[in-house]
Length: 128
Image (cartoon, rainbow, N blue to C red; front, side):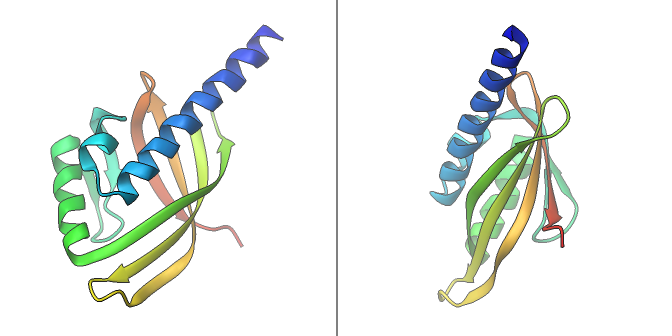
């Protein structure tokens, strides 16, 4: 019973942190989003390909991305994975600078936590 309460408390803390991260991302508040990640965070560069490692690399990636496109990501569901892993189903809409919709769909974001912060994020397609 105590272990169950700890588990639900931890999942609630992860969900709360991730909701704050999505809100910061959508508001283009890079500093607030990075504050929720480890300094050596391993982040996918889903727009250009590859990975961004560390705060400076993620900041650079997002700065380039926000200058070229306007992504908006809304978390829909939060599921627990392995210990310290949360899978988030999101609705993602991406517009160009003129406001034309480039893509609109659902993807999964998988977060790995270490020391109560995001250590890694991966993006995958919605299962069929």
